[in-house]
Image (tube, rainbow, N blue to C red; front, side, top):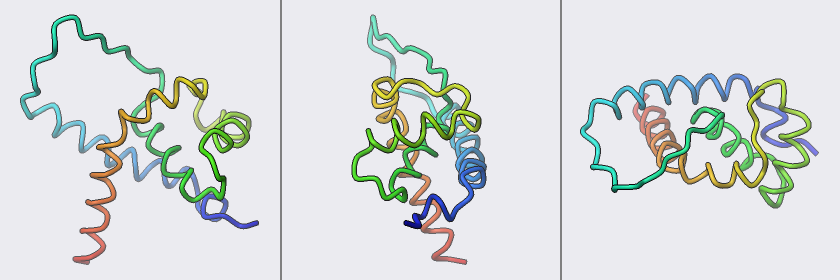
Length: 117
């Protein structure tokens, strides 16, 4: 079974996503943020935003029916060299909301760029 992920180079996807994340994070730092709630706890992740985004994007072209199958049967055993700081499935699911807005912006940016080119 040929899937989108098997036909694409995961390294190229990561490089494109990482370039976008670097630009986006630089802009994000320039915009004043909402004040944090007192006592708010934000734990730092071992994985970078671009790594989380790449895996989330790759799932949609993987052919797997559930993300859990994709992550536990494909990502953890096969992509450990590409992503040396992989976290457990449970922790990754906790990180996914962190990348939701960035993925949406990436798709919007990519769609507009390809539309106008």
